[in-house]
Image (cartoon, rainbow, N blue to C red; front, side, top):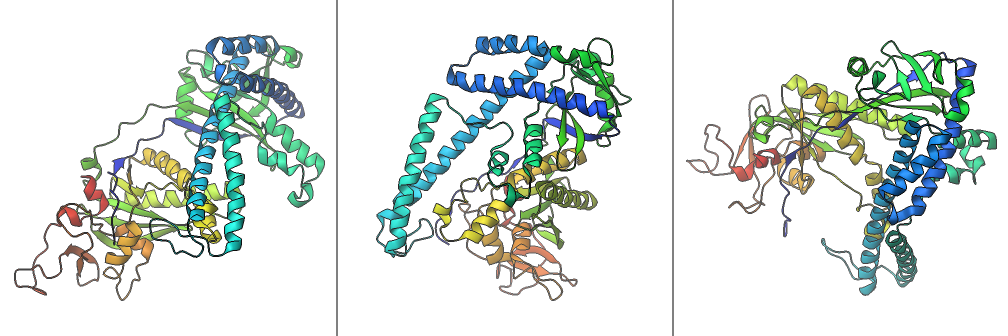
Length: 513
């Protein structure tokens, strides 16, 4: 098997730190939509101006400059609207800086790979640890040109970062590029213009504890009445005292509605965002608030009743229940999802698969789910995988970050802990040592099933990590406690009772204990 890298220690993942719920604004009067559009457009223009000022400040930004920007926006809106706009601009600039750093790291990885491969003779084969040379002189020439392109991009990106310069498009870079290919996108110019303007609107307000219903700017009462504090230039549109506009629509939050009512009744901070879904031509309001981070349970407590091991694949989650010793019991389960179509469809598929997984975990009586801590951020470049375009598309389409975030958030409500484990060698060792022993006449164990329920060997604990394990089966064909082949008192094949598996033979979750 060669040298094995050090396997990271598993840990119990922390829960979510915030909550966001959404509902539709139904039965809006024609005047309501007009007011929402006017307010969104006015505040959107102020947000664009403020974001430009924040980007211009760059690394020289300070609290004093932030206060100056807020004072300039206050006469054109209000002090609270100005605070929300400047905070959103600051968050957008910080996000752009993080994306810029990730882009630089990606370019550096590509330059390193190209430089290494170009330094090798044409046709030299690679190894498991490093790729070889390019196959032909023509490919070598093409990659040498691409190396110059990446080096130029890297130089420009580094210069921008040192100068504190970021590139941000309010409304989205993709939608801005769609303007040049409307026919291919199936949009008319007016349809594109409507989407572009709606994406650049700004109608969100931060909450404030102690104020009525937790928000003075966008206020929603416990019975669902929505009122908006109009910006100073638009107070002539008010239909309620103190420059407020009350919508005809009444809202109700189906998901976590009780928690939301408790917060607004106690005047605790709740942030709101009103936006238009141009594809459906529907208005929505999103409520969000912070929650205290739940204290993670100790690893021993999480594993006290076994665990569900999960292996993520391109179209399904492979899961297997493991006992307290890390041995697979029962039959594996698979939870399928379809990652084609729109982003909303893909997100719904992931949520549905995770919901079924958590329901099964609760039915099994376990207190934890162990999932691989996957991250393909630096593993999908064409410099690394070359001609393997289908493989790059495969790993790019796997929602690793979204799945982990959603699983942690959903599991927090069910009282199930999430254990993040190092994904190293799970598929390799599962296929090598566990796929065949766990296959029966009535069940065919796949590679992903074996990775989810396999016993993984830890190197450096006195045992040979490459020695296979033998799994005995009961009369029903289920896997029982594994043991060393031929280590019974009477030699190979001697019948004996079950024994506790040595630490080096257990599943990754037992390693954490």
